[in-house]
Image (tube, rainbow, N blue to C red; front, side, top):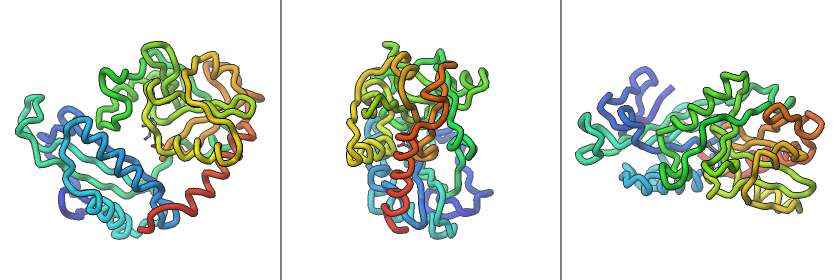
Length: 288
Ligand code: PMP
């Protein structure tokens, strides 16, 4: 496998970055995870825009233009002969001194890895996931805005560790006000009657690209769609629940904090959305 690293494609074994890169020292950088389906990159433009916006929020210089980035992403898939997989795009602050200051760092580092991913084992897409609310709260917009997809994922990693400690694969995270924010690596939705509900981004979640795609699919198929504050109670008593993300896609949730959701099996409306999502990803996208 070849990895794009600061201007060239190198073998995976040689894809090494400096220990003085502030991406390594401080998590100072941004990233994206993008999916490739049958030679089409799903929502590439949306991911490139979010990457640029995350970088802007951190006053981080983009190392290449949008056009160059698009071409490099496609080229990364082509050189690896990849038609289905997952692309990780990473921009770091670059090499600097041991101090925290980004001044003097640079140029920004750029890594593109085109590989495959399996976030949750296949059986959970059929059986559904059991998740749990964890003590660690999602960072607020006044701290490290959750809208920024930064390399600093410690907030989410703590949540993941707490979920795993109780035998769960995914963590439900609340914000400082106690409302539902998102899961450690995906957005959360409930279905109540014919209405699809997800926390608005101000609740403290990443504006997931899969989330937007799911909302659009739901609206088109005649469901009502709402973005609002959700409590744990709303989730516990929902008819259906699922999580969404680029890597996860759509995973039904059948238990939250030991409360069984619906009849304990993936909900019919969730499965319908998953089917439509699969249809969309196989048809849409940027040809590599
Ligand atoms: N929230 C978090 C914290 C994430 O890491 C991800 C995965 N990128 C998501 C939500 C889902 O976002 P997307 O659908 O854009 O992958």
